[in-house]
Amino acid sequence: MTPNFLPQFRSPLHEPRTAVVLGRWLGAALLVCFLTGLVSHALQDPPGRLTPYLQSRPVNGYRVTQGLHVISGLAAVPLLGAKLWTVYPRLFEWPPVRNAAHALERLGIFVLVATMLTELFTGLLDTLQWYPWPFPFRQTHFWLGWLATGGLLVHAAAKGPLIVRHWRRPAAGLPQRRAFLAAVTAAVGAVTLTTAGRTVPFLRRLDLLAARRPDIGPQGLPVNRTAAQAGTVTVPADWQLRVDGPHPYRLSLPELHQLPQYEVELPIACVEGWSASARWTGVRVADLLVRAGAPAGSGLRVTSLEVEGPYRVTQMPAEYAVDPLTLLALRVNGEVLAADHGFPARIIAPNRPGVLQTKWVARLEVI
Image 1 (tube, helix red, strand yellow):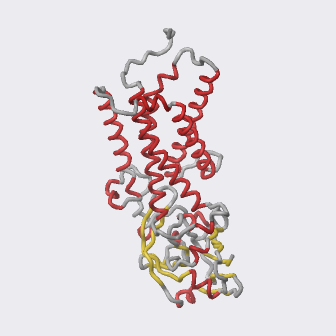
Image 2 (cartoon, one colour; image 1 turned 90 degrees about the vertical axis):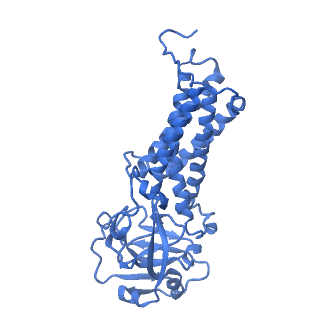
Image 3 (cartoon, one colour; image 1 turned 90 degrees about the horizontal axis):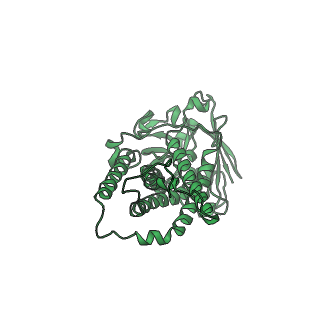
């Protein structure tokens, strides 16, 4: 018997069929988000054993996978809210714990919900580049993704018989259910259409709620880290590119401009979910490595002029270093690089996260 002091829930939508339908949609969104997140993590911080297998093609690979990651993560927010609304009356079941197995089930659900809420909340704030917590976002987000996905699979297995029983549409459906699911679909569609434009070009005119417009910024491109933030507003007048290898050498900016120049069209795609294409002009990194006497299969270490920062020094696997589309860029969209875009020189490579497209390059080192 339910005690009188507990709330009464009269909506017919607090029932298994609605929960199963929402669970299917939410599970699909979270699965896409998890798998594309693994791709993002592997490209941004690959385990050593994976490095030889990273590919520079397709050119737009990271742009697509990271765009899907953020789009599916944002779509999961209203889906999770609707799902929790449907099942939250079970929080008030009496007695709260019937036996040890029931206690473990409730503990597992608590961990699952807490993990999902934290994962989506921190991911949403990452799209705003706001980090009001003391822990490292990327590593925490990665491991929470595993925990949430594992918890979701365990929960689905535990509820398997219930899910199977309510998977098919009943002969006589509730009118309220159809209206509710239509409202949830509209909410997910609205969130997607008004945020996906930062990475899907044909939706850009609808990009009303996204944190960043990818066509606004110096030279028509957004900037995450400015020259002022990096301490590179003033570049030394005697700046030279240092290339270290079996045959090290240095090149001044005029000397770089005298080398064969190539133009490529490549996107900048950032972990926050925005991306934008541009025409980049510069020297092929592969040519610089050949001049330095780099052995076949050599990778590259890139060092920036910035004094500090987690990506001041980055590494580029051989697959990217020898790709003819990978440039030490000196110009963008026909103009000399602005300070915020990496003047005097920056890296631009295909299928590579924006944080690894090092700006204000000072040194290339064969590894």
